[in-house]
Length: 240
Image (cartoon, rainbow, N blue to C red):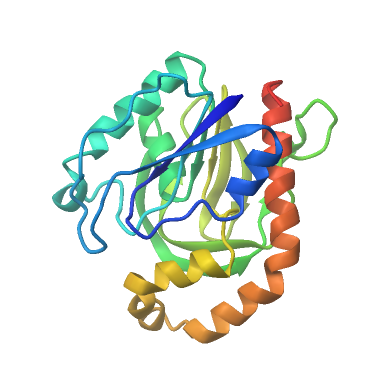
């Protein structure tokens, strides 16, 4: 059985909708939590190796890739792990912070966004998004869940797949797919994030209860979109 390793950057991170989607495609789910405490960005131990890993999934984080004051104990190690996966042709799926890690590791960059992007937002697909074996896009225009204050710059060799008013939303480079949005989000994921970051929503003028209600409404289609994204990404790698 193929193995998918999820890297969790925060102690209250969840695989969400991606876990069942990958399990349906025949993947065993492995998980590693980098940080063990809700309010700490310090690594609890060393990163895992890539032994036996067929797919690496980098999840989101409340930190920024460039926030070395908080994550300096592990971010360089993770960037190195991603480069090693790329060298070994192990596919990497990066989500939000994870997508930013992919960008930084592979020659792009990460910076603060002009404004935050939070909530269910549609994305605009580029022509490159349709460059798949069957001509169908890797993912559709959504809406997809967004919660980010940073944006990535696509690496020089990367293909931009989607954009939003905030900036790039996805790129593909070799066997790697970086997403700025969160295909894994359901209500359980969102409510776990609110344990630490509910105040950030209020600071950004977002009503947390309204966001939870919107997420419940989006849940059925979000489940379908997440499964389709996983299936199409794997098909594009010829590994499904």
